[in-house]
Length: 332
Ligand code: ATP
Ligand code: MG
Image 1 (cartoon, helix red, strand yellow):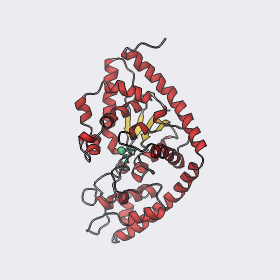
Image 2 (cartoon, rainbow, N blue to C red):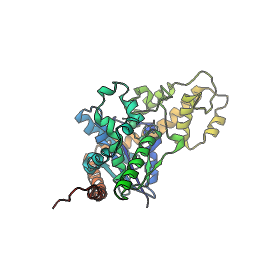
Image 3 (cartoon, rainbow, N blue to C red):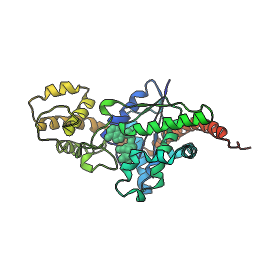
Image 4 (tube, rainbow, N blue to C red):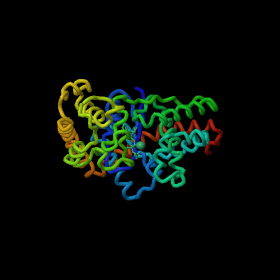
């Protein structure tokens, strides 16, 4: 079975609809006929300052949410990144293969360091795409299911894999991004030309998977739209309405065209009210299931421990090859 690998940062109390529709839903689907490795990226989370207690809590909440949405530990290795030290170890080797200018071109760094200025950003934030390349290459996956914002990092990953293979010996598989076009960039409800983001969006701009359902409904009803009054999919000119249609279509399976027909001649209020109901129907059971799972921390820890063991077996083998090829003397 082809391998897949992906990760998500524990940088908020809840995942949001961008994470779910852009990536996590594909994780669940790919389990059926792939061999998946899914991890919670706590090493990436500390590229910006984190409160240790909160980080620990969010890591467990992340695990509970992944299980609640249908990640099955019998099919997928689900683990915490810091429990598999090979990620950081391969990360270093790849940093030494990455050009400074190459790292500088990563737009995520530009976006994420924009607020405080480059001088305030950590070196970790600058090099995190290289650690991400290590996260991926360790498992030699065929596919990496992610949202559109990660496409550039996937290209860097392929470049680094190719460089290593060329300089030493063929070691890494060149992974393909697995990006579903329709839901690859879910927009912020309040700022529909930006992506919905755990760390950059305002609370009103994010639909959180673990919000009280009534709160999610209210956020949808207050989403920013436009003044033209027609319900039509047009990302350029009508980003707010297009985003609502995208979410609606993804949750119900109805096509965008069918929705446009259904809402022809009707007001934005109708669309928002109906979508709010769809969202409430979706998040209510998800929230209950996650809270239940969070009550059993012993179970969560056991799942993560077993996931880390499965991941380590693969990661150790890859790192052993890498160290040998780079010229490190093997112990003993
Ligand atoms: P942060 O703001 O802390 O970077 P994030 O919301 O971008 O958080 P990540 O943990 O960085 O979330 O990303 C997890 C996955 O979700 C990645 O595959 C990413 O591409 C995807 N993703 C994130 N935001 C969106 C979005 N708005 N639309 C589609 N996919 C998204
Ligand atoms: Mg992100």
